[in-house]
Length: 416
Ligand code: FES
Ligand SMILES: [Fe+2]
Image (cartoon, rainbow, N blue to C red; front, side, top):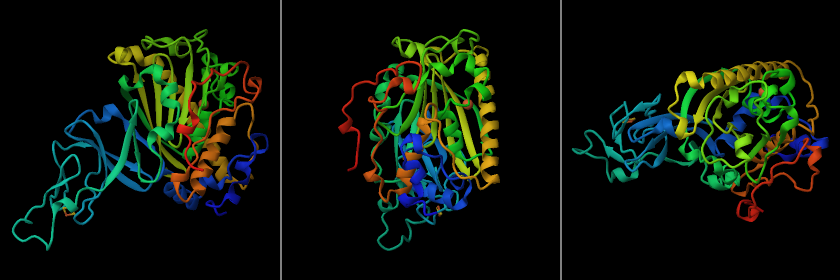
C-alpha cells in the first residue's frame, strides 16, 4: 500500500455513510508508523506540554516530536523558545530529561554554552586558536517553531505548516469563555499504553462505546445528550449538554469556573485536536491527555488535570473524587483500546463501516490523517470546515448542536 497516494485512502474519502475505518496496517505496520512520524508528527502542530511545566527562565523541557528530540525553554523575557536538542559542535544531545539550567544550556561533551535564546555564548579554548572564519553567531541552536493556546504548549518542526491559529481555527474563539490561559495544572499520571496512538484518540472521539465500556460515565454523560461540536479547524469534537449530576456528583464536586455563560456552565466539551491532544472541558475542570507515539503498538499518554485559577489551590482531597473518576474511566478506555490493538494485529480483517450516528468525528479525523499523509507540502493543507449546517440535526442527536460562533471561514481556511 502506498500511503502517500490518494488511492490508498479510498475507504476514508467516501462520504460518511459509505466510508470505512482505516486499514489495520495503519495501526500496526512499522513502515506506516515511520511515514506517519515524518508526514504527520514532524509537520503538524504537536502539543508538547502545559505552561506550568515551564514556569520561568532556567527550566528546560525535553520532548519528542516525531523522530526528533527538542528542547523547550523560556528566555529572560518569559517568551517560549524551542530548539533541536543537538549541539552545534559535534551534535551531542544537550539534555536527556527535564532539568534546571539557570542561564545557560551547556553541552556535556566539550561544554559549549548556549543562552536561553539559543545563541552560542561559550566555546572553551577557542579564544586562543579559533578555526578560520569562526563566528559564534553562525552556530546558535537550530530553532523550532513554538506557540501556545491557553495553557497548552505546541511545537511544529516544519516551516511550511500554517501557523497555530490557522491550525486551531475557530476553537480558541469557541472556548474563549473558559479563559483557559489562566488555568493551573496538576500532573496526574503518565501511562504507557499497548495500542497505537490513533486508537486512543478515536476511542475518545466516539461515544458509541459509552454504555458498554463506561457504565458509570454513562450516568453523568448520557448518550442521548451528546452532539457534535466541530467548527473550522484541525479538531474533532462533541459536547454533552447538559452535564448531568443526577446520579453521581464526581463532575460537580469542584467549584465552577467564574464567568461562564449559560451554555459553558452546563456543558462538557470533548475535543481532540489533531494529532495528539485530547481535552475534556467541564465547567469546573479540564482533563487533558497528551499522546506521544512510541512504536506502532505503544503510546505514552500524559494525563493532566487543569483547574481554574480561582480554585487551583484546592487540596488533593477536594479534587480526589473528580480525579479518581477520570482515572477509573481512563483505565476502562485503556483496556478496550489495548484489546482493539490486539484484534487488529491478530487478523487480516478488512476495515469495517463507521456508525454514522456516533463516529462522524472519526471520519473527519481519518480524513485529516489522509490529508497529511498524501500532501507533499502542508502549506497547501486545507483546514476542514465545521459541521455542515444543512445536515438535519436529528441525524446526529436528540437535540440541536449549540450554534457555533459566526466566523469568517475565508480567514481560516488555507490552500486552494
Ligand atoms: S559536541 Fe557539544 S561541545 Fe562538543
Ligand atoms: Fe471511553
